Amino acid sequence: MPVADAAGLVLAADAMAAEQVPPFDNTAMDGFAVRAGDTAGAPVTLEMIGTVAAGAAFDGVLAPGQAVRIMTGAPMPVGADAVVMVERSTFDEAAGRVELEIEVAVGNHVRAAGEDVQPGDLLFPAGTQLTAGHLGVLASVGLSTVAVVRRPRVGVVSTGDELVDDGRPLEPGEIRDSNRRTLLTLVAEAGWEAVDLGIAIDQKAAIETSFLEGAATCDAVLSSGGVSMGAFDYVKVVLDEIGDMRWMQIAIKPAKPFAFGLLGETPMFGLPGNPVSSMVSFELLAKPALRKMAGESDFGPRVLRATSVDSLGHSPDGKTHFLRVEGEQDDYGRWTVRRAGGQGSHQLTAMARAVALAIVPDGAAIEPGDEVDVIILR
Ligand code: AMP
Ligand code: MG
Image (cartoon, rainbow, N blue to C red):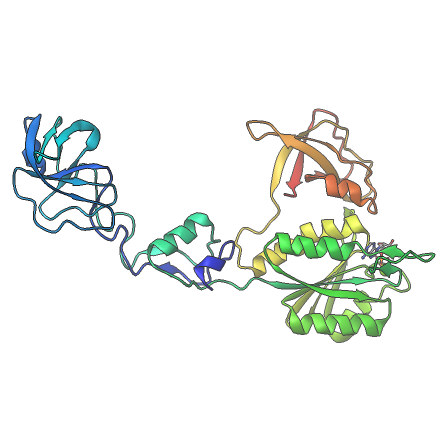
């Protein structure tokens, strides 16, 4: 991959340096390149024999008693071994003289060649997720391409006879498809390639066609709907017939129904249909797997401790609840959270407003002022 396009991707191989950084000894300050010994007993006056800018090189050798005016980043002239910063000098260009106020040691303000990177250095190991700093280092050693784990291509399909996605007025019993929009966006926000596989009606043939297309063109497929106990929930049936199906009911609320299977090599995530459930299911179950596919090593959800303003407990029902909460962080990073609105699995507005999911263990009594674990959503 060109380094220019690699932000956020994960190294598939160790990144090694072929060049040294800095490439040559240079000055860290604007000032005068000198022989350190000539500054003994400062103030001293030296002969000023030239000026060297960054990008140029001093043509000649600095002899005892001489100084070269030098700009930050310019190569050290041959013969010079230290720099006196310009603020500690007074110079007379016409007379070709400079007075230096201070005595300096060998190496003063000199950045040695290879001080940051040596040829053959392991810059970053395979598995590193590339951020701005990493890409800068790769650029500094002249690497224009880098071996990375491919961005997963993730197909998204909605299932359901009731779904409408063309903006026309709704007929009785119809609703608008929102899951495809949320899931495609969640995939894109994670930095992966989102592939719209459209809507499949609640018929085995339609779901099969869509799953086969997804498996053939994508690294993973997310479907929503059709995984619970209804008479027309065919996702598990189809996955069972054409793939290796493992389905589960998970002791959480929302997002209890879930189907996972493999179609050939392609993982298929059958997320629940309710709009909040499909998002929560994505966050908890699909996203960690996709992050692992993308080469990330730290792929679990980010759980933090927060203080709740509201009462968040629930009576025992055998499930861990994930409540949609709004909130903010104070200047020290401590989170305060409160209910984001209606907590039904069909009430997507609360999910849209939420910054986190509060993890409420079965039967927990979380009262105002109590602490609660939260999963940060953004
Ligand atoms: P299902 O699991 O297919 O029975 O769907 C559960 C609930 O989610 C039903 O009320 C569906 O109408 C609704 N639902 C399913 N898919 C979508 C979708 N793509 N967008 C919005 N709601 C959906
Ligand atoms: Mg359905």
